Length: 397
Picture 1 (tube, helix red, strand yellow):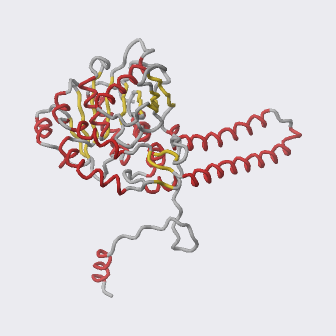
Picture 2: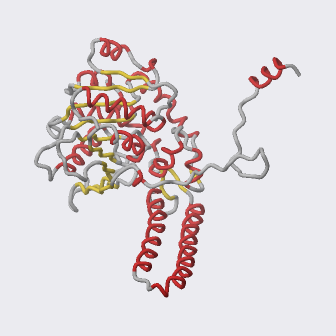
Picture 3: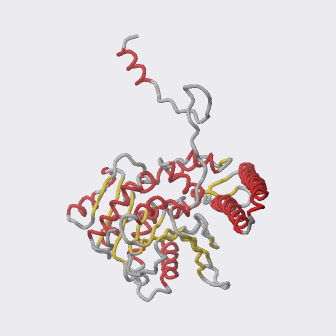
């Protein structure tokens, strides 16, 4: 067969997906690792902020992942990170680590109402007013012990980007030091058009997963496996217990660390004559730890996972998130604004005029999907760090 015919045949056939099963022989493909990883590789800690009291019907607990708060330097700008619909604060993990290596800042990634490990009395009240109030309450809790409130930058992706714009317009009394607004891959025209097919998109995705590994392997919106391994569990809950999937990741990691800690304690008190005996016990302990981890995996596979929030039920609020968004973004009382998109065709007429008038900075990233900050966290971190440094909001490292 000629080279021309071979090339034509190759172009006409769909690409083959590599097998994930390891095998023998020269054609075997190495098994990929889809095991979840903990948030602690990227954030310093998390805190659960209690909002309201026992008599308050709006009582809630908001999970917030924190980075850069350890040195108590309140002069560092604070980035409030707001995730998109169905995601969680863990979607910012890789981006947060990259940004902290580029400039002096602090980051707080919030699990919004109905998402991640946040618990509220009404998880499906995703109205603009309620979400803005939630962000204001979390910000108050974050800064209540600081004498000087730091400069604040609102950063949001998709639904979170729309929420950041609404917060910039509605929380001027609560966030008095707001100096920056960053919106990632959401504009009014494209968002409103996409809503028409959103129910179909949601219905066509898997309803459940037998394990966290299978969920990470599927991970429909994220093209970066490293990002999926930490953020996908934040989008799921156990089908039987309703417990957030991230808790199973923490349990597995804690089992490992606790076993290592116990082994370390025993070695610190050993006599030289007992080392051999203790090493045998250590092997037994390691074996027991492995059994515990396997039991956790077997149990979670048996129970399976479903989505943390049923986004189809939130449809009554979709239009209110995006309607009038372009004008709200352009007129928000914030001096420094940045819009990051995955395609130039997403700018509507109002934004095209605004960017030509210098009302905001616009950046376009090629070869990324909707979850830009997960697909290319390095580039997004570079863009935002340059934005912060150029406007003298943050100091470079």
